[in-house]
Image 1 (cartoon, one colour):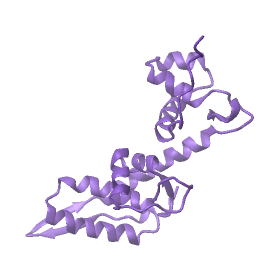
Image 2 (spheres, rainbow, N blue to C red; image 1 turned 30 degrees about the vertical axis):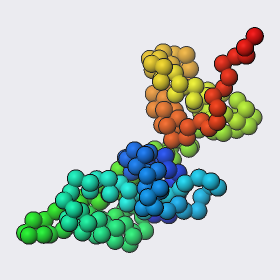
Image 3 (cartoon, rainbow, N blue to C red; image 1 turned 60 degrees about the horizontal axis):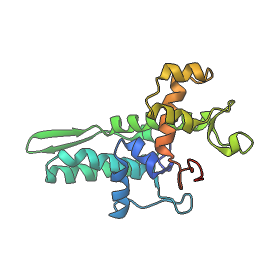
Length: 196
């Protein structure tokens, strides 16, 4: 699947795709190293270019400052010129007879794999008002995605989960965990009961 560089991601999706911490993405917004692109109201969103720039910056932290700056500039140019992830190329920098190659194409391949995972997640999970009150469920079932993720968080064995929910596969459990991480529930937790 070809992903265009204008693909829009939420901050949490960008952290997953770039393989960096969510705090790195939020700090980049706060430091104005990345800017939000048109997306959902009141939500920070990045395009794929900005996401790759964050991934590059994080990986270049260990490089010496002068080399880092030059490579960062070349990588930024490569990303800017690319129309899709498949167009992103490796960058070579030569200084004092030492060639440094930054494998931008591997980073783009990782991003493409993770974007494909997000696509699978979106294809497998439904938000239908007629099923479980609109809570996220696996398509074609009434199984709540957050419930499955909660069971895993509570150290319930995956085999036991699959026995209790025969329509749930190991892959669905993985996607439930990812869904819970990328799209955390907003608002106050549900009340545990009323004081009597």
